[in-house]
Image (tube, rainbow, N blue to C red; front, side):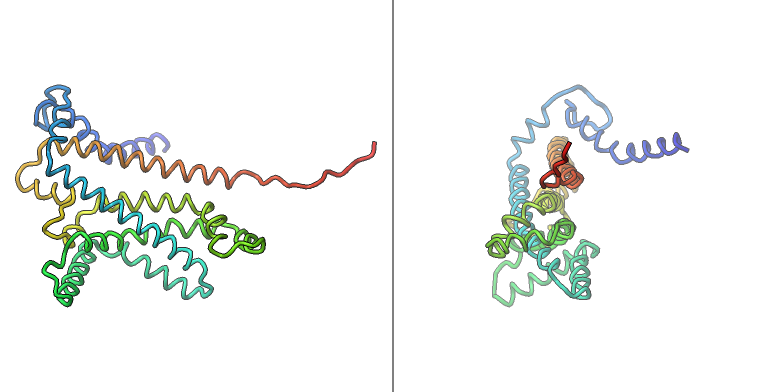
Length: 279
């Protein structure tokens, strides 16, 4: 069974990563064919950095993802701390259910409902354009927030609850005890939530498509608009760069988790005076 299991695993990985491998290889193609590799060239990377519209969309995407991930991380960490301190198990279960709704809800439903809400509020306020950068930012924070909460909550539950109490007994205020004691303990979860929120915001198309205004275009929306005509190989070059950036972020996240688990497995040294034994 072991050789069969290895073959099955290899086929699964081949199915998952073969399209990415083809994209990586043909991003260095000197021609514009996806079936014939004419020769190694950096021509499409050069063309990419001369495409001002694509670079503008990339800049918009990075600014949006960075703002959304930072705000979602701050709000998600605060929400996780609040949920963890709830004493009622029913209230905690209700909050966990509400947190999970944006994740299990289909993206198209979330996008349409947010669009309708933004248009309704915009008309009430008498705005000429209801959809813009700020509506997209609110939408991205909305679907990134649950992922941050679910990354920080397990770290809070693993932490020794007596640590902040001991800090406050030694004279710390609750806020100072959180900064000095709790924050370092849950930091790997916060970092993982930040990276996950950034990658989710970077990748999103459906919700962005429904909540974007006319003056703000993200990279997924631009690529979608290009599919109506022709996707040039410089998009393969951009996808290759994006793939390696996301890979680096995932490696950082996994290294942070590995270091945290390593610290948890280290046995605690007992401090005390050794018993004196008379010869």
